[in-house]
Amino acid sequence: MVYFTWSYPRESRGKGQSLNNHACVTGWGTYLPERILTNSEMEQLVDTSDAWIVEHTGISQRRVVADHETTSTMAVEAGRKALDEAGLAAEDLDLIIIATVSPDNYYPSCACQVQDSLGAKKAAAFDIGAGCSGFLYALSTASQFLATGAYRNALVVGSEAFTRTLNWEDRNTCVLFGDGAGALVLQSCQEPYGVRSFILGSDGSGGKLLYLRNLCARPGDWPADGKPRMYMDGPKVFKFAVGAMTDTARRAIEQAGLTQSDIDLFIPHQANLRIINSTIRFLRLPEDKVVVNIGRFGNTVSASIPIALCEAIQEGRVKDGDHLVLVSFGTGFTWAGLVLRWGVPAEIGKRAFSQAGAARGEA
Ligand SMILES: CC(C)(COP(=O)(O)OP(=O)(O)OC[C@H]1O[C@@H](n2cnc3c(N)ncnc32)[C@H](O)[C@@H]1OP(=O)(O)O)[C@@H](O)C(=O)NCCC(=O)NCCS
View: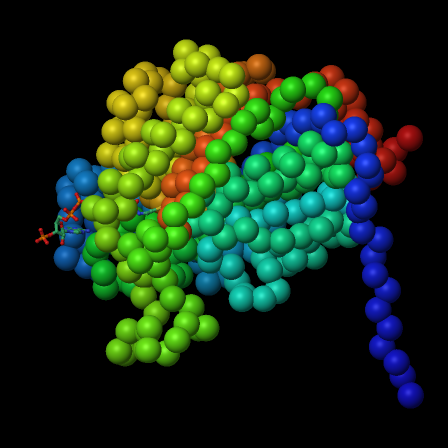
């Protein structure tokens, strides 16, 4: 008789290091599907117009996954770029967290698929679903594991093939969303870089204003034709969003012991240009401190903030020592905001280099 035996790879363990560690961002990367769906193409699908979409949302086009792409494949591509940028090998990762509400499977998690594809043999891996706030929930969570000294290296990804969930006959929702992925590598450090404060919140009573049922819902909760559909009360979500983004950003700044004038860059969730503009008006932030890319990508849900951050880095808008405010709202309702101090201390520069060298077999 042949017995199947399974030998567990050796996972990372809490190292019991000192409690006052920090977690700085050392790598970043995005993946965006090639297919661009323009507003004029949307006009062929539903009763809408380029003028309406631009005026009401600020969106001109969005990216849409091809048949061979999924949330996990996009997360892997973005994750690889982030690891390269950090000079780390996948084997160096202790933790992988994927923020998504459009995973390939109910189970296994998207994070486990990414762990396997990357070959991150000793990493713990799990998904976080908090709608459009998911990436900031994931970033705050990973930072805690590093700040306690339990783990040293983490990969945090926001990835969504959200257009696969859309009802392409509903003009109220299908024009708003797009697909993509953005990833950050975090490494523990002694100097105060990385997440300086975070505010996470939820109010489940808002769940009835934005939802998509899954297969496990009571059959009676499904639409009569049995097809699951996104439901959204756009104007009510809009009203909630502006209040939540403004209040959360203010509290995150205050909790970090800073004032608004200390903020170098504001990276809001990209759901609607009018939501962003109202928020920055309430916060009295100048436009040149705000990252906006919704026109080209639409709302990419959990991927929206990391994609915007990565673009800002590539455009040279983020400098060492800068204080960034990242803020989001989403289904749930959920909201999340944090202050991130940008930069990599010298100790990490060396460590990242020697780990990458070791992975390549260098002395
Ligand atoms: C959805 C949203 C863009 C609608 O914009 P709005 O200015 O609030 O528009 P309204 O809901 O007042 O609708 C105005 C009209 O436009 C119509 N309309 C909606 N979508 C349309 C479209 N794509 N093209 C043309 N007309 C459209 C509506 O049917 C309505 O028509 P009616 O007055 O005849 O009923 C906006 O409410 C919004 O962005 N809400 C937040 C959504 C969000 O962020 N969701 C993600 C959360 S993470």
